[in-house]
Length: 348
Image 1 (spheres, rainbow, N blue to C red):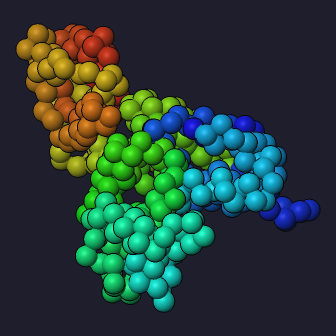
Image 2: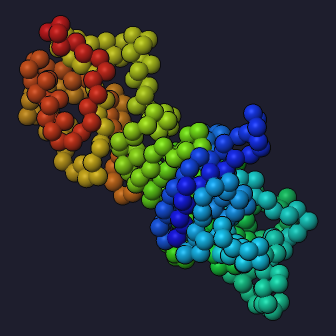
Image 3: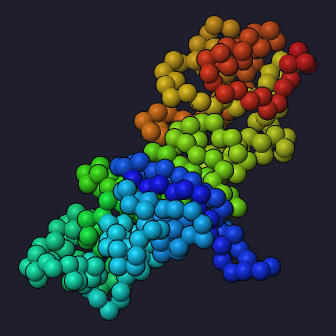
């Protein structure tokens, strides 16, 4: 649905030139939800604006639904853009227009009759679950309601693509979850391709099929959401994931020499991570029984991503040195990621 080939975008010239996007190539499939994540200044918002040519790339080509946008004349580009909806962090609603007026605005010049426009706008408002707010003004709405208006407006021209630029960043966690659920519903029922720009890993976890990680204007890592979380390769991706997991607290406790992490001879502290899609075997309890070792779980952080559990536990393993070592080897054989954080086996 979206094909970016060697996209670069520079701002300014000379010594002050900014290379916002550097040689990015991406293929986004029809009907998928694709996340682009990065810290502030990574270039992700500039990249998404290149997808509909709100920012014209300095180099490279953009194709959407088989049409190369970068080769279109101005009039053809305006028509093509109608099939690319976009929503923003701060909603961008017109305060002087009602909810109805905001959603109807993209339909001006569409050739639809007033009756058809009324019917379509009401249907869109019902779709985003604010059908009773047609006569309200933006200042009378909550943040979540404003974003629902923005989504309805973005859908007015029946787009095949919906671009979401930090669309939930201004919302509280509960409202964010509701808006993401709505976007997922629209993706499933309308078959619309969704691109989500975010700096929040929680958003990617919630609904993305695949994800690209940006740093310094480049895509440094991309793949299925599950794979990115299970086996992050790049330091920036690892950093993102650490910010969303309480399994990292163990390192603070070890540094502080907390009583929780003081080991007896023969014990070790391990961080266990799921790295496979179907960890259906009860491998932790099986390791405990098979090798006669104790496993005292300190932290656990398990989530479901793309229908499979991901995350892990931090545990203290105790027992005879050989048995503890054998238990660790068994877990590794079962494709559990094992990271030894503190080891007292040599003291046994």
